[in-house]
Image: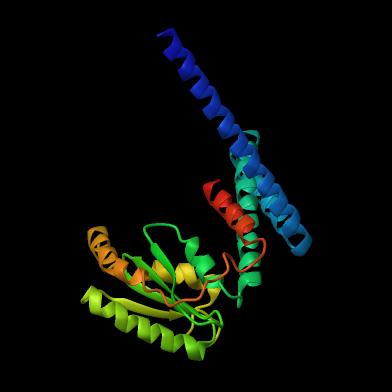
Length: 246
């Protein structure tokens, strides 16, 4: 029993140390992201400070009306700090998408950051010019997302739709080309666009479709894409996930 108790204590201590280390790394990532964003975004600090001050003033004034200003002041600071942090996260995300827009692998990178029950298979079709089609399976059905030269990508998406349609029956299939021209979906709006699609199938049917599509995965025609659209893509992805967790 003594040995078991000692082992449990050591395991708890190790887990606590791991949590502290992970927390430290997240704080370091956030601080680095803040420093980078502050240099590139001159409006970041004014917006963050403005949100904090506005919140404090509003809560303090409300407190004066009801004679509880010193009770509401800490709440105003907390709410203001949260608002400033949200502003920071959104402006970081906006900067990352602006840098990624138009680069090879940008859509794949955005899909890799989808939150929820999405199943993404990257580069199921493509060309040596790094045009690519990515297949997304979710509650709406199947979404084929093309990125690259619009002329070439539309043909790739159509070909992939024919291949997929033979296996999935009446499951809805959506076609998307990422870009900024008419009829295309901007990179920064891609995740939002997918999340707004109607829910047509349940998770059980998703499992069945995924099993049927697994045969296509071994026949990929897509060229290898970069892991992210930016050299610092992996770091920024970690920052975004950290912001969402906080």
